[in-house]
Length: 111
Length: 156
Image (tube, rainbow over the protein chains, first blue to last red):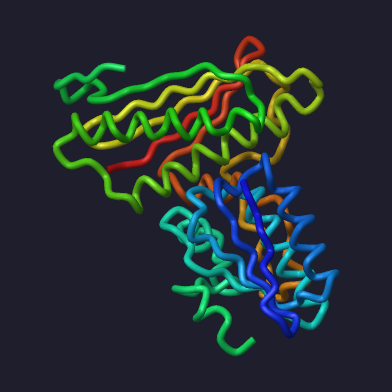
């Protein structure tokens, strides 16, 4: 998993992820999102457009990022989830709090 | 891997034995991908991408469970075997490992830990088995002669 946090100004950043969001990288993703929030990027968009697979460990990392962002007065949004990621969000009903956005631009709107 | 035409025999199957470590998860996904390619060739009405996503999710969770818990007390980890079989009306997966026994609550009791929509109270773990249970039609766990067996089935 490669993760790049791209600041967009005004406390907004896009976390671009490439690869599988699973047990192997979940701790790193969790730390990167926490660092971004700690650095003042409290409005985060996680771009899943290039993520093929998410497991519950990866989901835990996203939940951790969401909680960090909310506690800092911001939010974390999911953009461009693939089929498998949508299934995970639906089965866990987490799509109620991590609503998928069709594009990064859509997710950024209103931040 | 081989393909067969009979209704009561698998039309596609694949198996692999690999180290039960997070570093080898890509081999699990590759094995799955190999299976879908074979099923696409041999099944008259192979499942679509969404159906496969449910099955893939269950595979990922069981393997993660083995890595995280069965071999949790063994620094060197261990091996696991996976076998996936596609039939006319279902796909089945079986996983074997020689790690410690599963000691959690009965798997059919697994529930999603989403009690409220209060984000701050959301648990960051504990989703795996409930997610698996929700993704497939039947899930079972048995232990025999120091071997753990996880098995699930999803109807086509």
